[in-house]
Length: 197
Image (cartoon, rainbow, N blue to C red; front, side, top):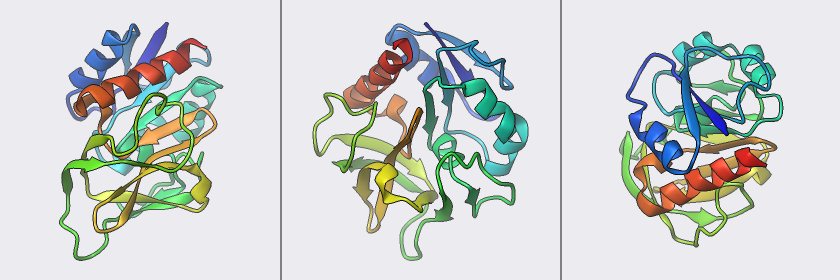
């Protein structure tokens, strides 16, 4: 069972690779989208800037590559699922309607630290995850989905932060599951399980 981690050229990918491997995945780091069907799952990690990442991968190429495989977006990776971001000028993947905006004025940015999750919907990540589970966040932007039904969990940071979103095979976390202890490991294992199906 092969999972690809897409390297945008910024950040250390060791933690997410290690978490995937611990869950039984064979992990390949790739620098650009591959051919459709070449991987059982795809991870867009939470490093880099919006425009740099979108320029590196290209929306059309990534969507053709995914072709039904589960895609996990972490932090920036999740933000790229939407149509646009205030962080950049390029369009996002558009697999979810809505935009990414800066944290509201008055809130410390970046939001860095542990917050509990309020489960609000279904997600391939949350099997066996209890209400109030803690996750580790590092971000200055947040999603503003046009359709609230894609939100599977929220966190309260003086504003309601969409913490997990899912639409079809695309699932994203604003937090870093690879840095979120046992609960994060369980979510990565749930993702790997979805890739096996």
